[in-house]
Image (cartoon, rainbow, N blue to C red):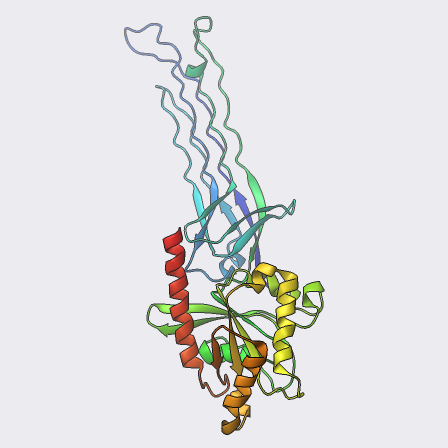
Length: 343
């Protein structure tokens, strides 16, 4: 079952240009000597992060990438032109593997970040470089070396500003449908999302963020139960976690225990992740009578001893979602400013 976007490509660096064997022949200079120039280096292949790309779909049509070869040297001590490097743009979050060895070569997480995946061949040496006091007319030169060639496997893992956590049927898929254009499957019976869904939430022009609907966790996920363990590592990339909880479960379970169960799984998987900034989102308040909502929500917060931000929403009706989205955008901009100041 694929939960990441994948693509396999072939990259080939350019070969180095051959060195030249040449002798200077000019009028009135009977013993001109060797003047063969070196070849040019072959071009290398680089992968570069591009924030405007979101998928690896383009690599399904173009799978082979080849850099230019270096040009051979020429007489008159002229060096051959080096081959141009080839830059292949990939989305942020791309992890690069050597398909033949399985070795992880690197990960691209920042715009403009480059990763060398195939080094160009070294240039050949011309005969002028072999001239010496004992070898006045060398006729040897070297060819350029071939460039590296590799088959790469690219994986695009989930990258999002905000991650949604909660038990299955907490309303995460409904929430992402309500605030973005993503359309994950939803239903009125308990089931868990099988694939992570990404949605772009646009607050206003030039102010937006990406939210990830991470498949629901269950008890024992950190030890491998269910699907959640496959996606827990993606939460480490998010800046903010929204913990959605159903305030009126159909099975009569306790919302407080639902929150505690997720907290235990996060702590088992990664103490650092458990300490990540997390907001409590009390969902499905539309299922409660209006005069009982405040008391029920306050009781949950009190028993949890929650001291962080709390929001009451209904993902189905949209109640409270606009305020929550606005607060998220403000907080993400604050975090970005803090990170820029600390860099």
